[in-house]
Length: 141
Length: 141
DNA sequence: CTATTGCTTACCATTATAGTAAACAATATC
DNA sequence: GATATTGTTTACTATAATGGTAAGCAATAG
Image 1 (tube, chains in turn red, cyan, purple, green):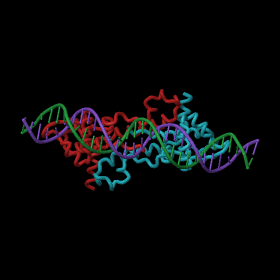
Image 2 (cartoon, helix red, strand yellow):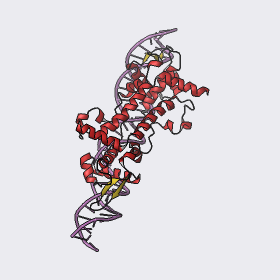
Image 3 (spheres, protein in one colour):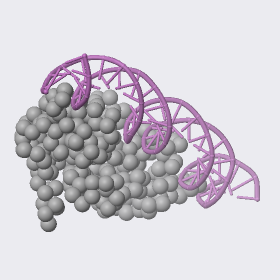
């Protein structure tokens, strides 16, 4: 039914929790999972993936925690998405057109290619700070 | 991994096969499934769904077949999509915000809401005749 | 040394997806 | 009206993706 991956949703939540605190501040994963309602075992893996993708820095040990690697203005939802799921590819047809049994003039490639493009554009346009602002706006109206 | 539903893909193929013939012409499902490479049993159900959604007219019996209900200019990919999958909903959060455990200022609703909007806009903008033209362009260049 | 924190691996249950098969219903034609 | 041809419907299966859990490992501040 073409749903957002829950792990990606959680990943954005985690990044947003960090973005809502001053840049450079560490938050423990416990705090984040409690405010953002992310299951523990799930969050652990997601944090590791965000760390591998260099979107966050992690600090084990007492008074450890995680923090953003860059400022929220420079982090896009697309980066978070790709850290979790890899590049968006809504149809195999778009990656390997030469393998398409309908060949050169496959009508689907145009159709899904356009759809994927607007999705990527939107994901690239949304930064963490944009989202963070949206949240605050709603909070104070 | 957020893939296009294969059934929706097949549905667009079927509609496109019809759109590439003069409006009003009937095609047998056999012809369509051979040119568009749609598995028989799959196609049967999809045709029935397209018929229920009043996107095609069907004629059983010898010399039967299917044809478009409207001209290709007036049929959007969104209509086809919704005939097969129902309305696009990439996150439950967007349908029932009141049930969201993160309440009013859920940061995800803004994020996924924007993404869903550009997707819907694009699906609505793409008509069958647009796609049909694209195919022909590629064929003759 | 130890408590606290993040990291890794393996696993499970449920659902969605892709596809198949077979019997059924309508109808043009002879 | 018999029959072949077409679309309709239902039930089923196998595989993969998703969402989630659990337990042990590794780093480190105090």
